[in-house]
Length: 76
Image 1 (cartoon, one colour):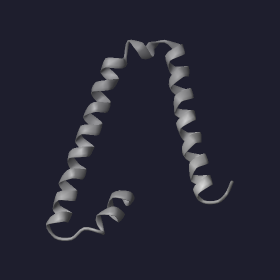
Image 2 (image 1 turned 90 degrees about the vertical axis):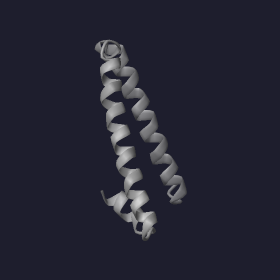
Image 3 (image 1 turned 135 degrees about the horizontal axis):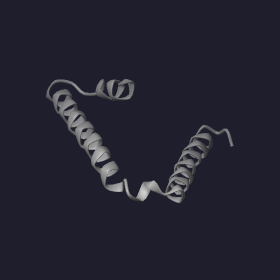
């Protein structure tokens, strides 16, 4: 809510309405896809190796973002 609210401040009038509708549509598509994808991936995610792979992928993404932010902030 904070991120979308702060981004929406740069728009006015009709552009703010289209931004709001776009955010609503994107949110609907994201959560629908998340639920539908979970249903499709249920058989695959019943294996422990699939969970380990997913956890490693998430960790890799988070470390990449952290190092990129640290680099851009001149912390490295």
